[in-house]
Length: 161
Image (cartoon, rainbow, N blue to C red; front, top):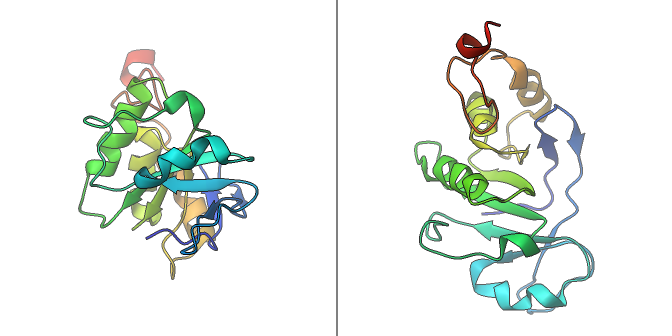
């Protein structure tokens, strides 16, 4: 699931340490930035730092109402690269007006970053065992997309680029 010890890659290619913590098995709310599961949303008002929500494939924003205006970040977990629901969730959350950070977690690696970025993701937790610097180098493999997306309002063929 979510490994909070891994570094975070931003869509601009910078790498930073993760600041978010999970609530431990002892159910004690940590100080600072916290990521909650859908079942823990009742703890949202008790968080002193930044607030994030972890969405798994079982918690579609299409059928669940999340307090988007109270969240700083939403982490979308990709259980496998062949499951495209995370892309749809990201695009849907952007259409619903979420302006905060969208972070891809789980089965995230270089070859899928361009698609994730185009779906509205801002940051990525690269899968353990994969090289984060190699992934960062591949972020700009595709600079002039043909199709419009949440990341590109007008595609190259529409702008003449």
